[in-house]
Image 1 (cartoon, rainbow, N blue to C red):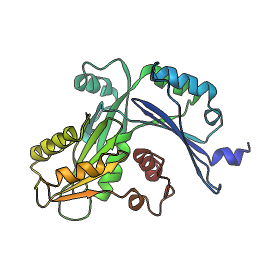
Image 2: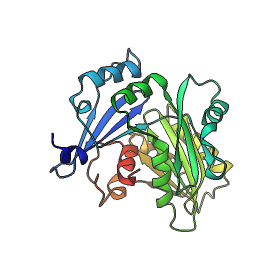
Image 3: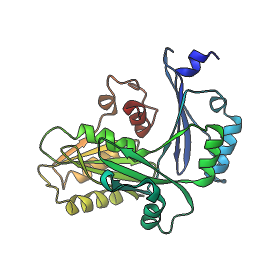
Length: 269
């Protein structure tokens, strides 16, 4: 592999509770993106699966100019940049998640949104990745989505809430003219669970049922059912068209790449 080829290639690794996937971006190819989902063995841990993938997956043995690791986790918290201190992230995380298993705690500073997002990664998983990719950059999925949705939410006077459906979780993001008001993740099993959390947060934030807007986003088969049910309570409910969101971007037409990973590739963190 030539130095020029390596310099132009990037690898993105996506980690979630029940999954592991990889995306390579190689500009200049007819199809610049290659996306692979690892065949997980659900009888062993994520760390064990990752270790096996690092030993057997050809895509992980190549050389890259840049390696991104996207972590989809519900254990996230935000701190205003004005009050953020990098040395205190462990204390912030332990305060918010006192029962969490020991984690490597890290953070992303979101300059546009003026917050730092603190999150944890399983220590063994973190070390395995760092051993193979010493210069890897780690991002919470919510970091990319806050910046992406925040930019989209700048238009119009109405406040906007985005519900991102992914795996067996949802994350709610609320904005007022692009300024982030709220972010939190929840484990869910049914559409009724999702509806409950949306309406609960909607009421807490004093959003208006007639004027403010809800956007349903993500990789989930429940989107249409959720839209139909919650439209009984909220007037402005929108099912987001992924094709429209990424039209004109490098990832246009790549519907197999998870939505949060596409935002990472588009935002260029």
